[in-house]
Length: 515
Image 1 (tube, one colour):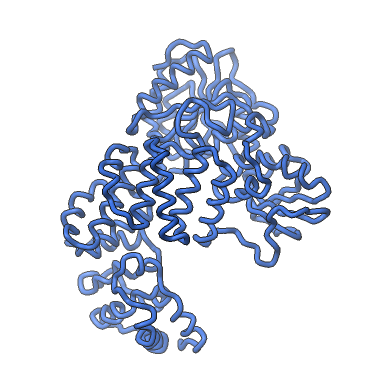
Image 2 (tube, helix red, strand yellow):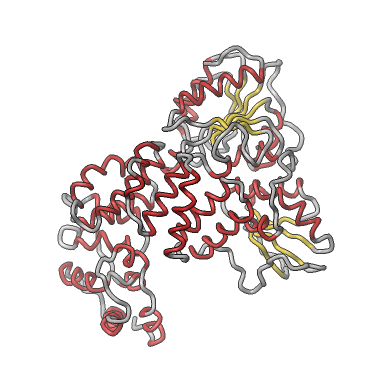
């Protein structure tokens, strides 16, 4: 179907960020604008050629235009004759599809290597990146893509808990924005905070609109305890990324007196993030005693939040949004309220009545060894067979605090008669289980935030690069008094950390050694 002149003009003004990032054609928006518009008109008004070779030529002339790729389709069986099939989905941010297409090629050009690397990075398949890195490095040696492959390898090493590998010669990786952000991320992960800050600041100085620089700096500031500044930088990054939850039909609240107006708090990011920043709701209520405060949360949190903050009207994000006058994203509450501390650090979530316990007086330990079963969870999650080292003694009852198990996990736990797998429908159910436990042992998931916000004794098995939430060192993080942080000593070493957890369990529950 032919496109209108207005559509063509809009297309002409949109240059994909991915093409600019890789500088695939090095096109200048000003010098080539007329030529680009001509190509857009061609694609908009002509049918896509059926012949793979002709299609390849057309795609080669237009693939730098993200918006045009919706009109250009390359079938998988054209790969042999049309290598641009790798690029088409990539430029549409369909990373997994691009990586799969590139993986079918017997050999890769340097450009295709960079596309495949970006595709795997975009899907957080860090193990695949680490396995392919030596071959990639040989392919791109001496090309403009060599630096990007090195950066990708370091990011994969960082996420795989190989901190020494990620940090090797980190000072020599370059001074472009991407290299500076990576340097800050690596230095921050290995605890060299005094060096990480200047790297982020240099990146922002070079390009204040780079969302990765803003996001990395936000996490760095939060790790250092600069809460208001860190969350403000995080919000700026979200705005640059386009993920900022704007409600353009309503004003954004920035702290002005509310009077009797209605304020909607839009809870965002992960469930743990939502519980973490809920601590600021009592301050908000005190700040605006005459206002009507509403909160929009995912359905699993609705009952728990309504019970914990009865003065606020919570609605599910699946329901129709009620009317309101102004809104604020939840992650901005600390900055808008000018909070300089994290009070309350103790209990502010109502866990409710505890769930029934098994008969007897054995200690009950709540456990969570992973988040969602996705590839990128490798960073913070522990394989169940490794975590099962805690099940070695039978004088402790374990309760699983996960609402869904994989078939493999269910089969593994069925062999443990002292490990209960209760049904969990929502966070009200999960809170009751947490309240019934003598101790919670969990990796860095929403379970820790629920337990900490509810004042339940908790052992956090921190990931190797230590998320900003838990500070840079020491056993006590800045957010929850009841959470003890167990940290890696360098690279990922879950067995050592689990051994420490077993010692803590024995001490807290007066149980014999568990491993």
